[in-house]
Amino acid sequence: MKLIMLGAPGAGKGTQAARVAAELKVPHISTGDIFRSNIKNGTELGRKAKEYMDAGKLVPDELTCDLVADRIAQDDCKGGFILDGFPRTIPQAEALDKVLSSRGEKVDYAVNIDVPDAAIVARMSGRRACVSCGATYHIEFNPPKKEGICDVCGAELILRADDKPETVQTRLDVYHEQTQPLIDYYAKQGALVTVDGTQPMDEVFAAILAKLGK
Ligand code: ADP
Ligand code: ADP
Ligand code: ZN
Image (cartoon, rainbow, N blue to C red; front, side):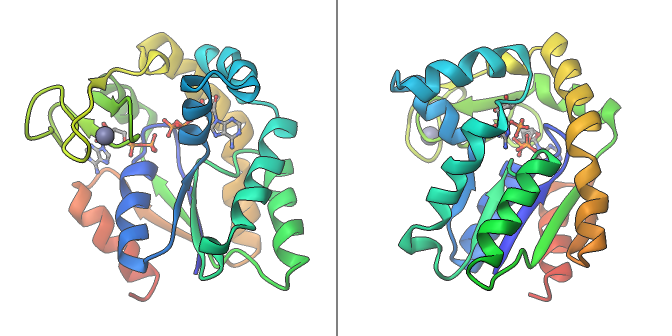
């Protein structure tokens, strides 16, 4: 099954994508994680992406589309994949459709996690991310077993620079302007399913599986 996750920054895409990927046994591909690992490793791509990310802006499509096309061409994606954080613009969605249709494939479901802006700002200040494996936690709603330490890999948890309230507002503006139109795009393809993302995490997960017929 080929899935994409839609939703505002902080809607819970990463949290749910990780769980759905484990359930469906397909890779979870997060463009944000790919960029962050490039920044950490000091690559050319990381250097270019960092300035946009720190400002809460989108990394240009030219730097993003080929990277995803290469990733989904790898062997582990043969049985499907979950894209988390891509596509984020109409040109990205068109680029993805082009790659898939050249192989006689398509996006099976676009899972839209719906959360109003007011709830997002509160959520982001409590998000903590693992510097090593990308796992995310919330100090109140999903705390790690040991404060400041990742349950999965034992590395340190941080507040991402782009999760500061000023940058979160820019990211929300960018979301409404550039990413929200994808809801219509996938509705027209008949691929859109929407879940209420304000529910507790387990309920959001159950709602997604139900919509996927799992
Ligand atoms: P969140 O899940 O909170 O929305 P992500 O980890 O998905 O955050 O993305 C963090 C940042 O990485 C974005 O604000 C953006 O700068 C960059 N980014 C990630 N995916 C894309 C994409 N598909 N197109 C452009 N920029 C992206
Ligand atoms: P996204 O990938 O869409 O940016 P995340 O999955 O990283 O979002 O979630 C953003 C923050 O909100 C994290 O701290 C996460 O633990 C928390 N979170 C995710 N889903 C829920 C939920 N249903 N209720 C409360 N907090 C949540
Ligand atoms: Zn970790």
